[in-house]
Image (cartoon, rainbow, N blue to C red):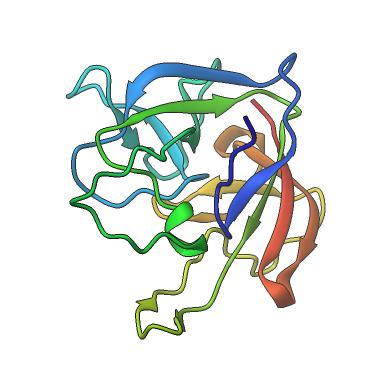
Length: 175
């Protein structure tokens, strides 16, 4: 089944021979998590994911991108507003995976805040700070978004395409 990860993250190449998805995990019960954010195992809550610390790296999908599939089990008691902004948010207390694998190619897009036709507002989303980022630079996690890294030691991604003006980049996972 094809999945929609929203406006801020997606796959360009998701070859199952290189992509590793560590599953049987759940998102935290509370908090806001974006698909494509860097996550790791939550040592305080076995079976749960936690936001990765700044500069976190790890092999074998111990650290990787948050991916959540098939989240369409909406309750009649939840908001009926489902749009492209909310598609990029991970559902709390639901199954999710840590995705890694050298060669897996992803894209990130920053989006401005907006007001919907029905008056709802969405906040701006910054997945990656592209200040000074060029092709073949590394991206590291600062605890909230990807930023320019110093090299392979502190980075999970390497940039293959960048359009800083439009807040867009493509990168391959290095681990």
